[in-house]
Length: 162
Image (tube, rainbow, N blue to C red; front, side, top):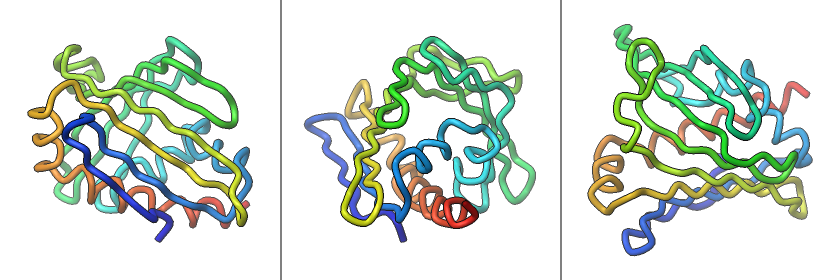
């Protein structure tokens, strides 16, 4: 499993994941920067993602939905706030309706992804910052931590394909 740690910090309003991959940073970057690769891991295995819009640049919109085992769809959106290929990506993230538009533009989290070369490949640190402790607890109760662990666990298979 590539996730080596996760930490929920209610005082800092963050949920942090650290994962390591046996690939260079530019290769790990592509699992974020390519919508077809992103679809293969952004969501737990039983809730695969479909990317409906992908504007991978500062100010760009990403719209996606995940489909559960019973056909239930859950939508999400990002607004990309920073791109420093291949080492840093930041975006605002929230829930979307059936058309891909934000359900509540104020109910947003902010994600910061950093990729750093490590001894055997790349260390990916993903920090999600919440606007309140209540939002953090709600997302934790929804299974965000386990879902992200499972989702990130799919990246090794993509990287192995070259």
